Structure formats: C-alpha cells, structure tokens
Length: 338
Image (cartoon, rainbow, N blue to C red):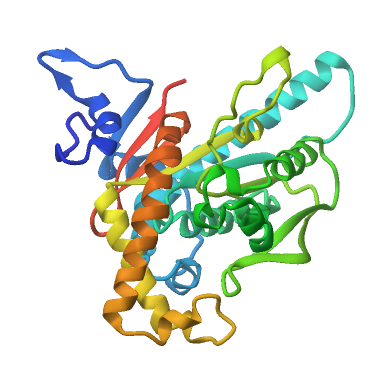
C-alpha cells in the first residue's frame, strides 16, 4: 500500500485527507482508509475481463477527459470486481434474511453514489461503470441517474434568489431526491427521474427517465454525500447517502479542477455554446478575454465556493476515493476499511 502520497502544502483541502496515510514523526496516523498506488490497485483486477473497446471508451468519456482503455484496465476493472463482490454479498444477505423471516420478495436495487466537484470527471466514471457492470456474467440491468434533474427550475431559483448558487445543496429539491431514492429502495416499478438540459441550462418540464427496478442504480451528483441539518423534536430527515449501498468520491487538487473547468468552459465556447438555443450562447459571441473573465468569475464565486463549503467536506463519507493527478488520470485510491 502507498505510504507517502506526494502533496503540496498549498493544497490544504487535499492534504488533510491524503496525509492520513503518512508516518508523522514515527507515529503512523490511524485512518479509516487503506491507501493504494495505481500499480497496487491494478493488481486487484485478477481475472476480470476487459469488455470495453477503445471506441466505446471514447464515446463514454466527457469533453476534455483523457480517460483511455489503459485507464479502464488500471483502475476500473479492479473497481468493477470490488463492486461485484459487494453486490453479491448484498444479494447473499438478502437471501439469508428472507429465509430467517420466512418471507418472499425481490432484492431491491443496489445503489452506487458518485460525488465530486464539477469538471472532475464524475460523468465519465459513472458511464464507464454503467457499461462495465452491465457486462458482468450475470448481465444485471444497470441504470444511471444524475441529480441535475432534481435542481429547482431556473424560474424557481430566480424566485428564491438562488440563481447564483445553482449547484449548492439549497438549489436542489431534496424532498424529490429523497422520495425518488425511497421509491427505488422500496422496490417500486417505473419510478420517474426528472431530466435536465445542459443546452438550456434548465430542468426539462414534464420530461422524465423511467427507472423500472434495475439490479443496480448509479446515482451521480456533486452533493450526493451531503448531510442534512439536524432538526428538533426527533423528526427524522434521512441523508441522500442513507440510500446508498456503496459510494465513490472523485477527488483532485483544487487548482487542477480549476484548470479543467476553465479548459472545458473555453472549449464549450467553441462548440456547444455556438448553438443559438444554448443558455450560454452569448459567451460564444464575445472576445476570448471577456469569456475567460466570465468563466473565472463563475469558478471563483460559485463552483470554488461550493467545492470548499459543501463538496470537499463530504469526501471522508465515501467508501472509495479516487484521486486524479494533473493529467486528469487517477493516481491514488483510498478504500474505506471494513
């Protein structure tokens, strides 16, 4: 296992977590995580077959994400094997409990939560895992839902004065999120997940993805590991993560994420923003300097603040943390001890 991750003192937001694996003055810091280099992690793949092609990986990755077939072999095959063991263990426990209680029924979906900052690569990870898990020998049904559809509409955000906090926990309809996950875990059929348009930068009214009792559900979003405020009088308000069977946090040093965010923003300015229907179309019509200034303002005032205040503090709640290096590829893995 990896003993001394290479850190910069300027990255306080990352150091405190990854330094848990270091030896401080001859005294090893006790951590709830096991830390691995990618070469160590890759060995856990064992005989897990590679079921994706390079063309499929290219189709699954997000804009400016350099993930390749080599990255899938180094990281995702071992992760697929780990998740398979968790799913099988959950199924075994379900069967034992059914015998114990003498009841019949179907196992409810195994839910995997994926969290992390904007531009860090959550969507790519979610899509690759969806494809790998669906190709297990048992051929499970796997669905993917993102939290974007659970944002309040732009009209509602403007009404609440939250448009400049879009993506913060308070900009989501948490009641709908909890109801959706509760229905999924109750084993209900044909549960509706609202859809979101990144072109229009808004929720699509009355458009839904129907989730019909999959074997596995991947639930991806920046704040899915966020905890709820404690209320008085013992009223129970569950966390979104209470419905997760396994959770993953995609991590990177903040200045790397900033660069990826700005690179993506400027790339979108030359592609998707060109569409007259795009919410950000006007930023494809201004100078590069003006666009850079606007993108930097979005990062500083919204995304960086959200990362520091709401997203990074949830990292220790994950079962698995994947840290990316400056090249946008995973270079360290932390797995919660059992």
